[in-house]
Amino acid sequence: MANSDQIPGPDNEFDTLQGIIVTAVTANSATWAIPAPEITKLTDKQNPWAATWLIAKDKQNSTSAQKKAKDLARKNYTKVLRPFIQKWIYRNELVDDAAIEQCGLRPRDATATPTTKPDAPVVTIKRGVPGELIATCAIIPKAKYYGCLMLEGGLLPSDFQISPDGKIIVNTMNNPNPNPQPDTVTGFQFDLTEKRLKHFTGLKPGVTYYFYYYAVNAAGVSPLSAVVSMMCW
Image 1 (cartoon, rainbow, N blue to C red):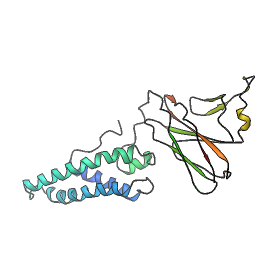
Image 2 (cartoon, rainbow, N blue to C red):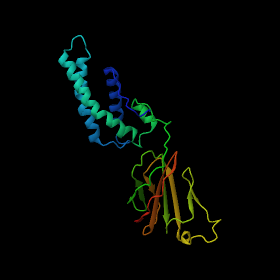
Image 3 (tube, rainbow, N blue to C red):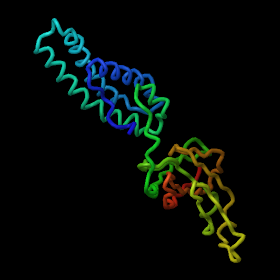
Image 4 (cartoon, rainbow, N blue to C red):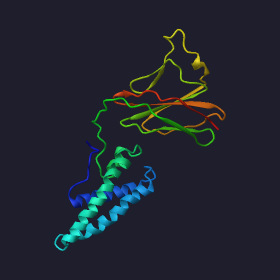
């Protein structure tokens, strides 16, 4: 798999890769939302590695003690670097495949197809600037896309469907007695992207909005989340 352990064995290759990674994540920490303390954890281990490697790579003039110090520094560095790569690069939705390659790593494995549908999302809503509500949900393993429905004035109609590719279908043509609930819905917005965070703007102050989330992967569509509502300011 492309996101399996990519820490190389030879010290010179390890040194090259770690330098590329630290440079990339430091330059893009704000864009990729990597907390500064997480990068500090890397550099705290990078410095001893760099110092000991500088000496130990001169094999003819370095002592066995200096080589052991280099091995220990690499071991300690790897313990921090390996989980960092997984959490802040591969599982970071703000880091796309181009950014992963910028880190000197292979892109995510595109051949692994999920065999189970995602779980139902857990949704949270907060207010942004006046007229804005911001929705998000917890990360769902193996979810490719996150869909969010925002309704103004009422709950989601009972006669709706989510297609296998995550699109919403509301069909009352074959229902002779449609739920009267849709008549109370005065506005509707829909967002289906790879991002969990959704910004809805231009909303009406004093109006309550209702949010539903779902997740999509190659195996299908998750159950719809529980509805979460909030009044806009």
